[in-house]
Length: 140
Image (cartoon, rainbow, N blue to C red):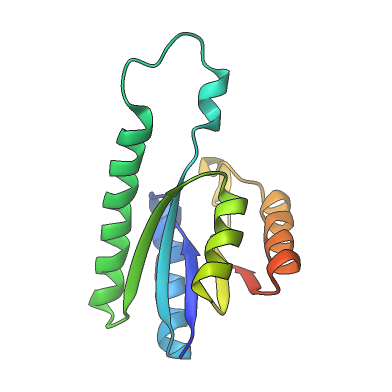
């Protein structure tokens, strides 16, 4: 039995990715590790001081989204754990994949205009993760 690392961020596109990762885990007899990365880089482009604790709020939201993903897996009798961490997505995925000894890293395919990623950029990230860690990385 192996372990699949699945990046998630919420929304309809993430549900499709979660469902595909859950089905893949069932097929392979693997467990899942859903990950949410809190990245505050976008704040560098804002003017003025942040009045609220943005990191804290994003972390709370991430933990909630991860709990929902974990429950979706449990409904399909798939064991899933979660991890919410701070940092740039690519670096977080590489570090976690190594530390957790995963067999596969799963990234969700961009879903049209609603995605912040383009397929070419996501493919470059998948290639980077696989090349630097030696861990199979797939876009689903």
